[in-house]
Amino acid sequence: MSKNIYIISGESSGDVHGGNLIKEIKKIHPELDIYCWGGERMQQAGAIIQKHYKELAFMGFVEVAKNIFTILKNFKKIKEDILAKKPEVVVLIDYPGFNLRLAKWLKKNNFKVVYYIAPQAWAWKEGRVKDIKKYTDELLVILPFEEKFFKKFGIKTTFVGHPLLQEIKHNHSPMGNKIAILPGSRKQEVSAILPIMLEMQAHYPNYTFQIAGMSHLGAEFYNSIIGDIPCEIIWNNASKAIEGAKLALVSSGTATLETALLKTPQIVCYKSSRLNYEIGKRVIKVPYISLVNLIMEREVVKELIQNQLNAIELKIEIDKCLETPYRTNMLNEYDYLFEKLGKKNASKEAADIVLRYIK
Image 1 (cartoon, helix red, strand yellow):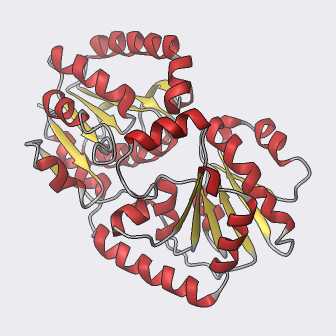
Image 2 (cartoon, one colour; image 1 turned 60 degrees about the vertical axis):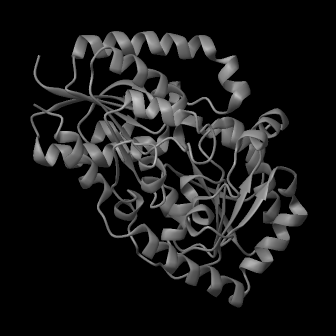
């Protein structure tokens, strides 16, 4: 069998980053076979899909417990596939609940492991640091403060820059009467968050509400929540929904950073099941849930979490975001954020490192 790389991602953001990583690898070594667990972006870049991420995306403590047998079956399948393919190096992208367990097995079977986009051990489960050190050969991080954090534990770590800096096209469209809605990529979170976001349409009838929808969830799912509320769905293209928007309502995660890079004021909206929330707040040890605030180490964007996410609080924050002084201040803070992120081409830097493991 020819030399190959195996890449594993379990969600949509990892598919995007994996796709760009594969493009850079293929520029240098077009002949390399790349197998992956991912999605359309990785496939379009030239990878051979072994399993789609939509079969892997379970979120939260309760959902993982309910789907434990499916997860175990997936483990068995991927181990068999990797043993058959014998890759030169396995690249794990984010998705730590699955990928860190797999890393342990990979090292026991003498595979080289590069972890791209580190598990957020600085936020919770710091015990994962020991596993990262034992079971990975190199860690590639995308947030500026992560390199120092992981290096202090003796982990070989490189800050490659944030991949969104290359992925986002800065068109800076004029702000129109549009509000972007980014409710997440998993059914559980969209079901909890989107109805509250859409309540705002009645208060702002002169604005077009544009939802960043994920096709793997299906039109029927979104329509069951939307009902007869006037709005549009932009499929699989969050940037298009954000661009030209007066403001964005964002569910957290990478989307908060994407919104900042597109210079759009935002409000972070997050809600999960009560059980997930109660467990989460006891184990998560960071003061913010949005990457914007975490990188800036202060509140730049307002976060409405759990019970705070309601129609009254959300309308108050929207009104503030529509006021010029508040907007201007947030946009100025975004400029400082860009400076902190640096100017590296993350996908290229990561590709160069991964290819060092090809003999």
